Image (cartoon, rainbow, N blue to C red):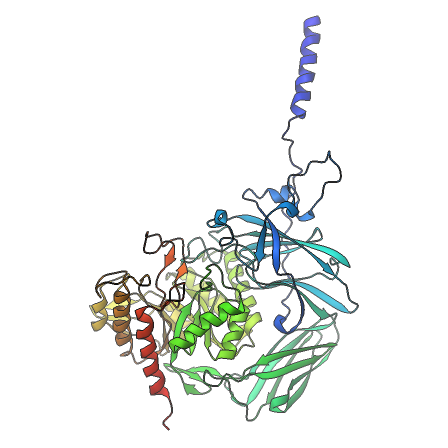
Amino acid sequence: MKRLAFLFLAMIFASIHVSASPFPAPQLTAAPESKPPQDLVANVPNRTTISLDGTWRAIVDPYEGGLHSRFFENHKVKNKQELLEYDFDLSPGLKVPGDWNMQRDSLYFYEGPLWYKYSFDYKKKDGIRPFLYFGAANYFTRVYLNGHFLGDHTGGYTPFNFDVSDTLVDGDNFVVVEVNNTRHADGVPTLNTDWWNYGGITRDVEIVEVPKTYIQDYFVQLAKGSLDSIAGWVKVAGTSGAQAVTIDIPEANIKQTVTTDADGKGTFQFPAQKLDLWSPENPKLYKVVLSGAGDSVTDQIGFRSISTSGDKILLNGKPIFLRGISIHEEAPFRGGRAFSSEDDATLLGWAKELGCNFVRLAHYPHHESMVRAADRMGLLVWSEIPVYWSIDWKNPGTLDNAKNQLREEISRDHNRAAVILWSLGNETPINAGRTAFFTQTAAEARAMDPTRLLTAAMNVTTKQGEDTRVIDDPLGQIVDVLGLNEYIGWYEHSIDTTDHTHWTTPYDKPLIVSEFGADAPFNRHGAADERWTEEYQADLYKHQLAMWSKVPFLAGMSPWVLMDFQSPVRQLPQVQDFHNRKGLVSDRGQRKEAFYVLQNFYKEKAAAAAPAQ
C-alpha cells in the first residue's frame, strides 16, 4: 500500500515538473484570412500626403514566429513578471524605402519573413478619407495598423493601399508590416530569375488624404487613332449618386464636364484642336485639372498617339526608330534597389547620353518616379510585368497574380505619355499552356488600355538552313510588336556568325530587338576574341549592329543592359562576383568601350531620321 502511494505521489510531482518547463508552448495565432487592398488612389504624387519614410524598427523572423507571438500588437510588458520575447523598440532599424539585403551584411542573401514597425503621430480631419499607401514591397506583405489587420498584397513591384479611416486615431499610431520575399514555384516571378531578390519595403510609404467622396481614377489620353480628339473616363468613389466632374486643360483652352453613372464612372470624348503633341524631341506636358464631387486633382499629361502600320511603329502618325537600352531598377554607385529621384536622373541621364529615345524598363514595373521622369525627359517606355522564364502556366492562381500585377501597373501609369508598350513577359518557353496564359493577360491589358501597344520579349526561333532564323513564336500572333532576345556571340556560336545570319518572320509586324550583349567587367582588357574583355564586348556590338541594320522590319532595339547589376546566378570569381556584367556602364558609372560603339550608332540613326534643313 505504501509502495502504491509513493508511485502516485511520484507521478504527480513528475507532471508538475513537466508543466513548469522553461519553454512553454506559445499562444498560437493562425495567419489571418487573406484580404486584398482597395482600388488604387490615382496620381498619389499630386495628392496631399504624409510621408512615413524613414527608419523603421525591424525583426528578422526566419521561422515566422511573429504570427504566433502576435508581433502586430506591438505589445509592451506591464510588470516585471510578464514574459515577452520581442521588442521592436530595442530592435535595429532599417531604412524605408530600401531593400534589407544592402543594409546589413547578415541579410545579403536572406529570403523569408521580416517584420517592420513604425510609429507616427496623426491628426484626424473632418471630411477626409485617409489611405495607407505602399509604392511596393517585395513580395508578400501583411499590413497591420494599431494592431488591426488591414489586408495583404502579393507582388513585389506594384503599389497598393488600404482605407484606414476607421483604424487611424488622433495622436499616436503604429503600423506593423510583415514582408516575406520567399520565392515560390507558382509565383510571378517564379523560383528562378537573373536578378537579385531584394526583400523589404522598397518604395515610399505614405498616408494619402482624399475627401470622403473623391476622384479615385481617370484616363485622359488621345482617342485611339486620333491626333485631335481626347477620350477617356473618370471614376468617383464614396458615393452612389451621379456626380459632375470637369476636365480642364487651360493651356489648350479645353473645359469639358462629364456626369458619372450609378457606379461612379463617366466616359467622355471631345475635340482637341492644335495640341502640341508629346514626342522625345518635344516632351510637352499639359496641366490637367479634374474637379467635382468635392474633390480636385491636378496632373501633368502629355498627348501622343502610338500605333503600327505593317512593320513600322508610328508615333503621332509618323514612323519612328526606337533607339533604346534595357534598364534594371538597380541603384548606381550604392547598389541595391533603386528608389530615389537621384537614381532616376542618373540612369535616365546615361540613357540620354547614349543617344536613346527609348528605354525598356525590365523585367517588372519600375518606380513611378522613373516613369514620370521619362515623361519629362522625352524617353519612350517599354513597361513589363515579371512573367519571366517558365511560370506555372496552368495554375489559375498564378494567372490571377499576373493579371493583378498587370492591372496595378496599368492603373498607376496609364496617363503617362512616355509609356507606349505593355510587355506581357520575357523569354518564355513555347507550349499550349503558355499561349493560353498570354491570350488571357493580353485581353486584360487591351480591355484596360486600348490605346497602347502590346509586346513580349521572345527568344525561341526556327532555323532555316544554316544562315536564316525565323521569328515564328505563336506569341507573335497575340502581340502588336515583336520583341526578340538573342545572344549570338555570347551564349551561342561565335561573333562572326552574325556576319552571315539573316532574319525573317511570317508576321507583318515591327520588331524590337529587346536584348543582345556580352559580359565585360570595366577595365578588363585583352584581344577582341577574348571573352570577358571590353574589347570582346565592343566587337560583339559592332557585329550585332551590322547584322540588324540589314533587317527591313527592325523598328528598334534595347540591348542588354545599361548598367551592371547584381544577380545570385552570376558567380564567376574575380569576373562576375554575383553581378551580371553586360552593362555598358559599370555599377560605379564607368563607361565601357561598347557604350561608345552604341552611342555612335545611335548618332548616325538620329542624324538619318532628322528632317532636312
